[in-house]
Length: 101
Image (cartoon, rainbow, N blue to C red):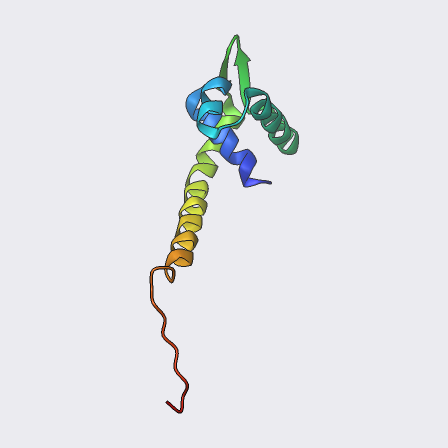
């Protein structure tokens, strides 16, 4: 399962609207809808109930959100940590000399 799909799911669940989630994820509501459809296909069940213009978590969605919230936060922290390590040597002056110097 792609973490991208889980991130989309989490954002839509927290916002309660594809339009609101699309603003924070910089994706169109249509792209979010397709991502959610792919997630539901992979899971074999619906995670949201559509009520008019609103989108509401159902029982399966609540279970999924409860299980992925912590691990997604950990993944995001790990990515940020790696980015910081990558930047570590950029502000340093490195001097090299031959061993016989």
